[in-house]
Image (tube, rainbow, N blue to C red; front, side):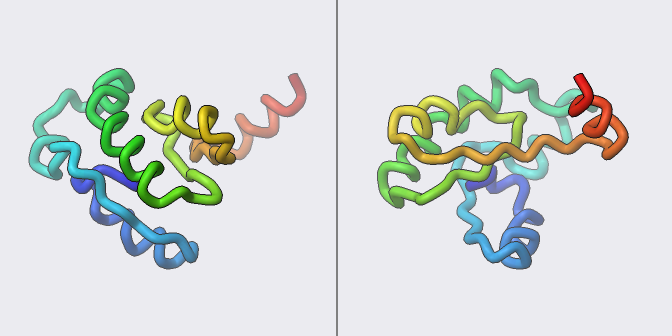
Length: 102
């Protein structure tokens, strides 16, 4: 599930063999373009995405949830329902390598 404002994700999900479900959270492409250059803050994503994510998980009962690190919306329900949560956290490969050494 992704904000409907990020519809380009549909093709990426299909390529990866996943099903895209747009969330009706009001974050349209136009809205996202008018925000701070850095985009909406994490708290805003949490507030608008929590209810539709919870409803979607209740309806679909997924085997796994894949989410971007920017939204904490699936954190609680995945823990509550004991559903594995995979976070997409894009980092430069060199930084990931350095973090492994810590």
